[in-house]
Length: 99
Image (tube, rainbow, N blue to C red):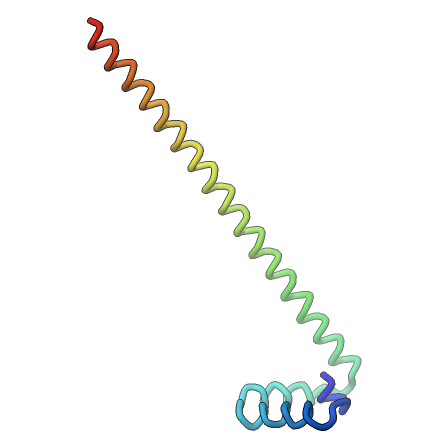
């Protein structure tokens, strides 16, 4: 952003220009950002991108939380079933031995 606004000088400016020479993606990105007619439109576009990214990350995080909770409930259910089977097996074995 500072490069586009002309706020860089010296080493920082050279670093950006070197990155543009070395990486076609960076050069294309800067060229695309220079297409905006005003700084306000560019700032608005960047803000919209950030909001969209935050929204998508939030949705992804919520899905991950749901998956983790559902897998925890399965672990609890399986543990309870195994414990009940152990108790049932103990009861059957003691009943068979005593009779």
